[in-house]
Each structure stands twice: as structure tokens, then as C-alpha cells.
Length: 229
Image (cartoon, rainbow, N blue to C red):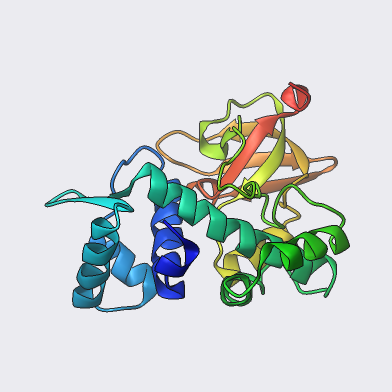
């Protein structure tokens, strides 16, 4: 498959399916209605595009279950995510945008960038390996290095963790997390996790934070002692 066979809209769909799959965690399939809501388009429009992408062997569609990317579809999604995540890093590190402002702009900008321009932007942003939200930047060939982090909701209290990635791209949530100083690279102690999906208590040096379970589901962490291995 050549890049010319995929329109910018097709790439947007592949990226959205990939990111919804990331948020779904254990679920293998993404619902078409969920995809329509995320893209802000009608159900018939999603069905038409799903048919095109299936014909290109970029996804599988199972009735009553939903859609899942093929290996080729995932690789193409990651190629596009490489463009977007480099654009995000450039907008934040070079142009001074806030991390809560860049998702839509980077998605629009990324589709028009070739590898030569991407490499220059990457250099100007000081060569990050992750986006400002902590998402790993894929390689040129659409592959992604393995990541060994977990959701904050799966972390065990009593240990020190470092935030590796924030999954939400909602500007209000990102601004709220920034106000709480809960951004990638920040270390904290997990003091307590209430049962039945209750709130979690964190300690950041001498300060304390209490966050809800729904917000904690948007944060991925790694044990601080595991950072080098």
C-alpha cells in the first residue's frame, strides 16, 4: 500500500480507532457508534468509511462487536501518530503552546508533513521520544517500542511512581491535571486507593492530592525503581 492510497480522512479514522482502542484497555473491538461520537460524524458516514478501510485490509468489522485494526491498519495509524506527536512536541517545546491546546492543531498539521520536515521539527524540539502527553513517538516505519507502564488505577499503594503518560486529550482535563502538577515525569507516592472505584490519595513531596477514579484511569505510571529497567 502506498501513502497516496490513503486520504487524510482515512488516516484520521485509523488514528481515532487506535486511540479508542488504547482507552478501552482490555476490549478488543471499538464500537462504530463510539467512533462516530469521537469523530463527530453520522453513523452512515462511519459505516461508509469502515467499508472502504475494510476493503483496503486496514480493519476487521464484526457485526455486533465492532471494529479492530489489522496489523497493516495499526502500522498506518502509528505512522500518522508519529506526525501528530512530533507536531505536538514542536508546538509545545518550540512555539510555547500549552499541552492542553495542541491536540487538534497537531492532528491537522501532521497530515501535511513529510519526513524531512518532521526530522527538523524533532531536532528543534530537542529530540523527544514522547509527546508532551507522554505518548511514545513511533518510528518511521510505524513501529512502537514496548512500554511497561500501567494505569494508575492498577498501581499498588505504598510505592513511589512516575507519571509516564496521560491518555486524555480533553483540554479541560489536561488543564486540571497541569494545575495539580500531574504531568509526565512527575513522581509521587500512592498513599491510598479507596475500594469500589473510590478516590486515590497521592503525595507529591510535601503536598497531597486526591483524585477520582475516572481521572486516575486517564493516567499511566511506572514504579520509580523500574525506570532504568
